[in-house]
Image (tube, rainbow, N blue to C red; front, side):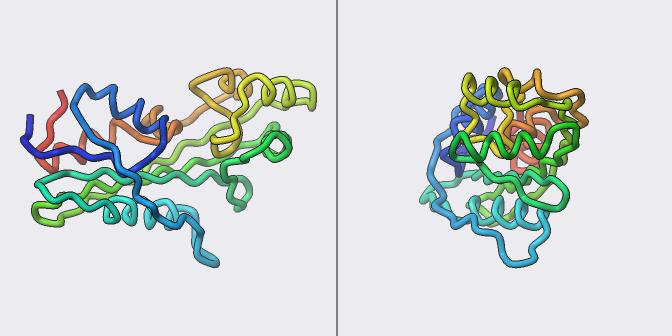
Length: 193
């Protein structure tokens, strides 16, 4: 175990829960980064730029390793953000019915000791079942996935809406790919377990 302080640059409860699975102490700080995409910016570049920006935005006075992460969901070249409300969630799930949504999750692990950064990207493809309006509305009313890009929580009842999840890192879909993160942390002297 390293003597470096580990900091998660995120206010996401989902990322916090995932990182806690590694069993190493960490702090959480809000990065306060503007997440507005640049005009014409490809989804992978959006996720990567924001993960790096989040890791750089957190200032720590002591030796630390900072984790930044961002996720972009795409359907037919359109970005699916967090719906924020019932109407948008129903609309997103209606659009995804019988189709595949790609989730690009970028990681940046940065050392405050030498300013070295390690960056990686996980892509997960989620294929949705053909969904009727009643199923979509019942799901949205039960789970209220308003803070979840694409409007379906695979770690909850949303798993019933899909027929397949193609990934090399199942935690990437939730927002923090732990397999990739473990490799990046090792590059910065933090070994798990």
